[in-house]
Amino acid sequence: MYLERFRLDGRRALVTGGGRGIGAEIARALAEAGAEVVIVDIDGETAEQTASALVAAGRLAHHRQADLTQADRVEALAEDVGPIDILVNNAGIVLVMDPLETTAAAWKRTMEVNVDAVFYCSQAFGRRMVERGAGSIVNIGSLAGFGGLRPQNPLPYCTSKGAVHTLTKSLAVAFAPHNVRVNAVAPSYIAAPMTDPAEIGGEVRAWAEVWMDMTPMGRFGKQEEVAAAVLFLASDAASYCTGAIVPVDGGYGSV
Image (tube, rainbow, N blue to C red; front, side):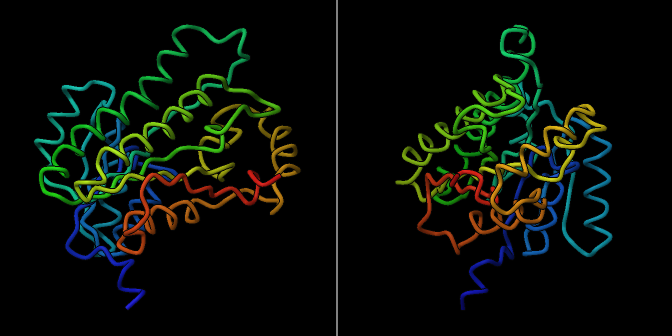
């Protein structure tokens, strides 16, 4: 009985930023639970590769290339994809700059990708869920959404994730009467491209020592640990959960 509540057979899910990293792992988790998955990424090649890998494993998967920072393009995507039962707003960027050196362009781009796109997708797909009277939206927030970070302090990123948390709660209240749940997962430092020295610079090696010292479990999180939390929130196992911001942080937020 209980394990069946985690199954997603017969449901369609869409994962933004699903071409690689945590997004790809979330797509795999939902597909393994039985969902038909649509992987959306601004990098169409990675989206296609991830979808093809799922199909090769016997799963149902599709891919789309899309820039989600434009409302009209998101609306066109929603029309193209058709009804979905689960939306995972995972796409995001982090630009690490000193707050006093942060440029207007860096601020704007971070907000476009991390906040605007989440709103546009939640509105377009959420409207259709409300009309059908069912659905689940899971946003990827961050421990950064609860305050500043150190030793690095990516001000635009922290601000954007705080906005995602509040957006999650606001939509949860608005959509609850229509049987549409909205929750978020707030990961801490996960072994993924965003924490890879090759991706964001060698200084991450020094930062990682501080991060691990501040994390009671003393290690990076795993992508599958984030994906498992998303699966829970997307499934009927979380049928009475809405407006929740679920930490996946190795105890970081408890210190």
